[in-house]
Amino acid sequence: MNPAATTGAGGRLERAVLAQLKHLEQTYPGATLLVACSGGADSLALAAACARLAPARTFKLVAATVDHGWRPESAAQARRVQEILTGLGYRQVALLELSRQEAGGGKEGAARKGRYRALVAEASRYGKLGSEVFILLGHTRDDQAETVLLGLIRGSGPRSIAGMRSWGRNEKTQEKVASESQIGSQAGYLRPLLELPRQDTVAACQEWRLPYIDDPSNYPDGPVKAVDGSPLRRAALRHQGLPALEKALGMDPRPALARTAALLQADLDALDTLAESWFTQVKREKPEGVRLETRQLLSQPAAIRKRVWRLAALAAGARASDLRKVQLDAVDFLATARRGTGPIQLPGKINCTREAGSYELCFRREPRG
Image (cartoon, rainbow, N blue to C red; front, side, top):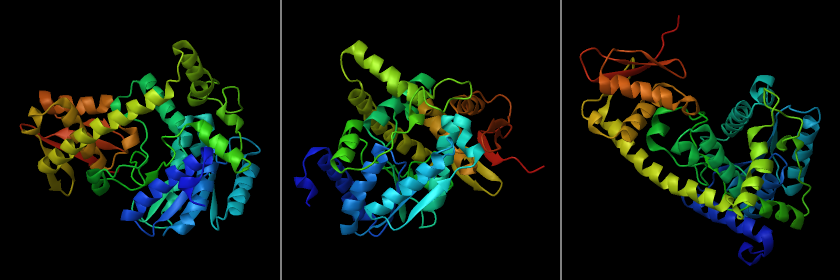
């Protein structure tokens, strides 16, 4: 069936997936597509659309489901997802189990990192992430809106508020200096459904008679809680916060929040490109770490400087997801005020120091004791 002629929610999903497959095929024909599927409506609808469309393209299609171990029945649920995906035509469906530490005892951040690490490890079996293999995720416009609001609540800056990308941006400098397995890099992740509302994935599953799983862990009163016993933040926002905001405003805020993310992404791309250019100019290749000659860079706005410090920290081995504004502020003060020589401690046991009497900063891993 021609997806362009298919009507309803299923048709909208198929057209969104087909558009991204065609885009991918222009640059990476023959790549492996690893579809991550929890069994929920979003990821199952994505998996079904890929199973319908990918065989006619040049890709190898595989899938994976993750067992977080949060609930006694989670293992059986993961095996059920395997069976459903096999029924859709997937010949290889990996079941990835998280350790207790990775699952995080209900902590969303720890569970997310564990899940992504498991997916990246599985993807690495098929080649290099971002060129030979891509991970497909079922995030929707609703997820994007939630991500924007969670970023605002944390006060974590424009990079977080810009949310997720439908096509993970290949951050050129970071690709060269950072580990492929770093959680912070979005290169290699595809989100074909990011512009569609969640109601379309539910409707598509109903159209296609797919037995999607409504996981109780995604509800505020569900069995999985934060460490302090409160509901998980995203679950509370999804089922309580956003509906209350919609009622108060008399309109659905999700489309506007998603547009905000898209606008911020364009601005961030421009700033990141400038920062990458400066990083290339001021970086000095040294065996003991990453050194920057910052005299000319100090005339640039803080938004550029701090991006350069971030790139240097990543090049030295820090994880993008662990870098915080307060740490980059401290590096910026060390560089601009030129008082003291440090060290400034950064994630991943990376230290930033200033060479006394110079404009040179050095980012390097702490020596093993």
